[in-house]
Length: 171
Image (cartoon, rainbow, N blue to C red; front, top):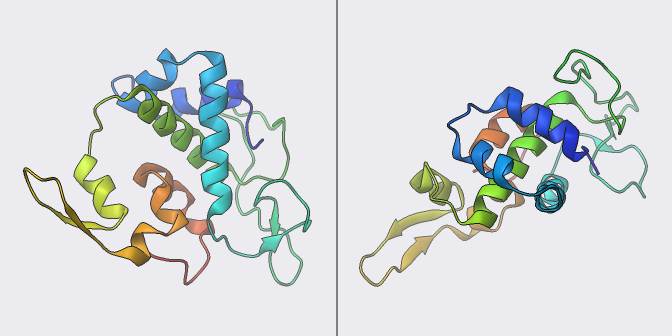
């Protein structure tokens, strides 16, 4: 796991405003459902192409990573929301932790079936180029729609973009 539920909760409280539907869904979810959302978020983050290579070929997650010269790919302070540095799991850049927390909140929102804000933007990110009404058909750019990056919420994408591998499918 990239984060514990408590660590994700602290990051979500620090990152998302009280009226954000993702935060509301996270806050409304049970601890068990938060754990499920966090595992789904971690799996989506892991599925993306990131700079460098996994530190250990058999590690559970995409991070920690090293650059091709073997140097660690941790380019920012590893501080918890309260300013401390004692994360439960080592080797994850702070922005990857933040992106995972935001993605977990989006997963909680989706699980509750809450109305999405910015739904058109999220659909465009997934490759939807047009929708017809009332039949509900849509045109899709398959390269974008099948990209692991497209499954990441736009807010999480913005936070994690600095670690995205060059040439990874654009959203």
